[in-house]
Length: 146
Figure (cartoon, one colour):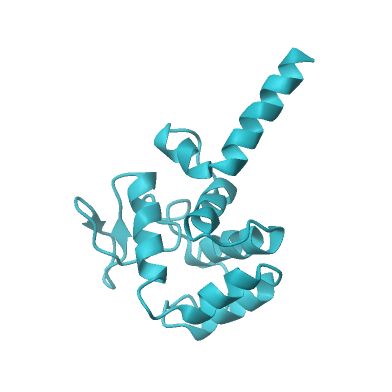
């Protein structure tokens, strides 16, 4: 029972503060990154929101499918030490923490209110996807790019 309690405590800690996993150098997955992004934005941690962000990561292809390291949504936000990955200025970041911060800065820059509104509702993954497609982010409708 002690082992189970320990595992439950560790999982609760990760779910309550997924960004700590990144700082600790843990194994970041598309799901844990999505959770950290949703939490960093102060949005509801719902299945719809996490699913929408994971699908967005897959559609963009950052980090896991290309060399835009630590940048799942392929943002072009400049950060100290980041390098340019492609001709449109997508960046490769120096760490998960930096890439998460860059994505948060980008989505809060004033051009993505529709995405933030959909995330704020928290109950409509398709609504988030539609908002991304209608935004100037450049993803388009969610279909994998890899």
